Image (tube, rainbow, N blue to C red):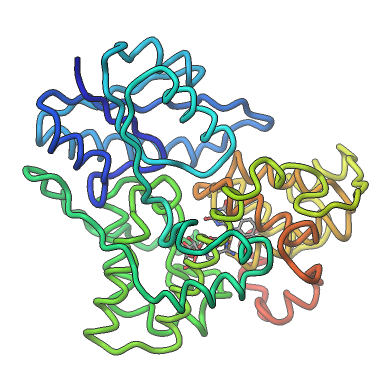
Length: 394
Ligand code: FAD
């Protein structure tokens, strides 16, 4: 009989309720992570896989400080877990957003003793009431802001000291050279909160290193906890003063919460062609048009630049994501889910709720009350007037 921490998108030791509880309650602990268990429509981006490898290596180093080995399995999730777990194991894990994720949680619950915890979002469904989620972001935001309190992050279990790393060095060729792992995530958080965050609201639509936080990849695979980010943000505000920009980073983290809680509320509906809407939608699927979009050969330079960037680096700015999604949906009239699936395989920071939620939003089948459309020519004049970004990537 033993305890197993089942690692998922919570690849850290800090603010890890499952790990902390296992350490407090059990003498013998193993840790397990199953990779490559999802079926892929497109080939998985190399950058995504590299980020995962780096993250797992850092996590294994942290866990080894208290004698826990991280076992990495591959294959179908339930089968892999069954082959690893003993019938009398207690499985400690964090709940995750997503229908497949929820199904595998149920599978494990049905067969083993479990202890499950909730740290993926800043706020929780029970804090809000489901009616706000079915409406719009603003109603949700007002409700959580009225609540006004946050869950405090937990320190790592006794005996683990976070390995310190320098933040990744700037590379003039790309927006941000991501490096996986909790240590790299914490270094980036520190670097961003020291200065750049105080002008975030003005710079966030840009394409360069410090124009936005670049925290998403670590938040997505859980090597950074949103509660730790929030606590550090509040600390930065206490030291240097809160302003509109520091509030805006919180505001964007609320979007992340909103999409997560929406998906938890609406199950698999965000994967349907009509998303959260009742009326039916007909989308085209023209393979040639999708291929041109994917390969950066649409002949619209701004769109092509972003599509080349994501293919080569696994990254694209929020402005870029909005422009290329709008182009695929509203100009090429393609099924928005093809775009979402391509992002799923490429983005270093792919997050099922944020990705499908944002794509559905732009397609007009999500929570939006209007359908946003981005004219790439106007967008280029506004956000890349000297064409520096476009020239770099075309
Ligand atoms: P910042 O601007 O510094 O924002 C701070 C954090 O807030 C981000 O790290 C992220 O966690 C959260 N955030 C910001 N904007 C959004 C948003 N619109 N929706 C949800 N969370 C947000 N974000 C993902 O994390 N994963 C995805 O797979 C993803 N897919 C997207 C697909 C489309 C079509 C669009 C339009 C947006 C998508 N986003 C996704 C949201 C957003 O583009 C990224 O979170 C952001 O670009 C990450 O960069 P950053 O960390 O520098 O963000």
